[in-house]
Image (tube, rainbow, N blue to C red):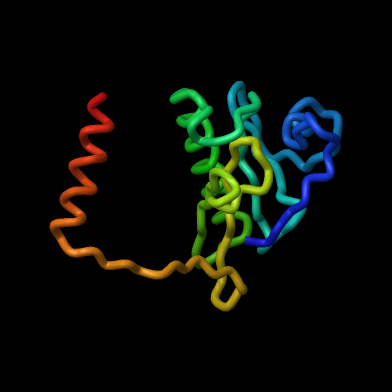
Length: 147
């Protein structure tokens, strides 16, 4: 993912400033919990960011209601992107933490129209663990979800 450098003063979130109307943005949708606006670093025409209105840094910091609102807004935006730009593919991308390649620490996801040979690469090395390892992972996750 291309690196974006947030030039906001320390302690000020660029997306919070955008939500407040302190900086300009080309908004495409907003409701009580979410906002959708054009990404200034367009990957392809129609690249939109969908964010929570309330400041929350990562997925771990949003409420279930905010998660639902962002997902519903992303689906609405995706349908509009398909109608307006007719891309043959679409990628939704959401990153958490520096190691997850998050560059703006306000929860958001990218709605990216995709085309053949558009230069976007989403790849990682497959580890292919054996079935007993996958079973152990599943058991650990199931136990954590039961707590």
